[in-house]
Image (cartoon, rainbow, N blue to C red; front, side, top):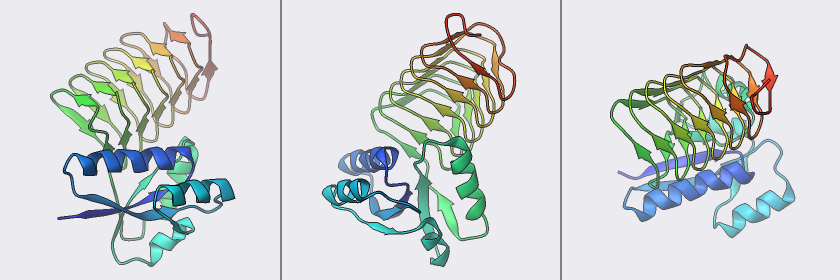
Amino acid sequence: MTRSTVIIGCGGLGREAFSILEALREGGDRWTVEGFVDDDPTEDNVALVKELGSRVLGPVMWLAGRDAVNAGIAIGSNSVRAEISARLSSTSVTWATLVHPDSSMGLRVELGPGTIVNAGVRLTTNIQVGRHAQLDQNVTVGHDTTIGDYARLSPHACVTGSVRVAEHALIGANATVLPGLRVGRSAVVGAGAVVDRNVSDAVTVKGVPAR
């Protein structure tokens, strides 16, 4: 059966999600993209969506008028993803979990609804990923790790074994979190940082070591 999906957000991340769906389709998976929705699309992004052969259907709440629709939130802001999910919680929207075929997952890896896994991501074993998390290109996640709801791991982030990344946390590009540590709720780890101790909730750390 063909799975028709609407992508929420027509910026760069939305078009990356489109690319994931195209890669899945080319591999024989029967996904199609009905279009994009966006509350404030720029002219440039609308034009780039058209170049992909797709279209912007309307604002986010366009989805509320549908009897049944599958969607994915491809927006970088953790708080905005949470807000959109809440706005659509009483509708018939179901959430697509998108996994690029050029990624790998070991045994007992669980992905929550709405999670997006980009090309090159490596997930080893006994990993739990929450709702609407984003794992960008070439992220690596080690054994026995938990990634919370609405968290985001930026390109080339390295999360080692037995790490707890809490809800809404952001791990920057090329950052490393050493084994057994916790990154708190809404915490931010700067690009290139090396985390060698727990990071408290709502704290931003950067540098080597991260402070």
